[in-house]
Image (cartoon, rainbow, N blue to C red; front, side, top):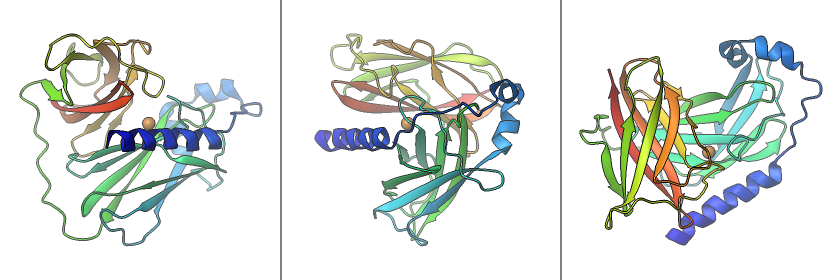
Length: 271
Ligand SMILES: [Cu+2]
């Protein structure tokens, strides 16, 4: 099982590496671009999502194709590599109980492709996070329905404790001032669950100390999160973000130790 996961990660890295295109920003007018607000840029870019099957089934290989294009439908073929990838894709179930972070291969001409499986019937959101060259990071998403009778969605309940044990690691999340509309720091403190010794040998994962994804309860808000110190090795890994409004959010932290990625989810209520 361990080996399988590692292989998937390596294959994804390899595919993306092969399809990697050097950004060429010669014909871009950067001074003009940077004057635009993020929302203006966002409106100039669209992504079309397609599944290989019109009636996708659970636990079956399904190819997701994502075409990045401008508002007139012309492919956008120059994208920056961010955290080692040109595109990060997050797949979540409607109740956020399922989370998958995958990396499509770049086929050129703004087209990204990734094969995956959806674990159950029901609604899933596919979110693509990318940065067209000369613009800010942005995300585009689409809901898909997987055929059949899925499990009843579970409510997304805020955690009563922000310390959890996952795969032999005890992880404590602390947030400096939990409030909406203000930049804040999320700190993950990681210990060995048995010995309580601080973990100090985290390996870079996607070029940084870890990768954190945050979604609002309804999956409508995908938050931009970045590490404060990319090269940290633990026991602390800190990230900055801003919660856009009060409400319940789910946070997934992904870290790597001993060549194995582990994921730790938390649910918080922002007052
Ligand atoms: Cu990613």
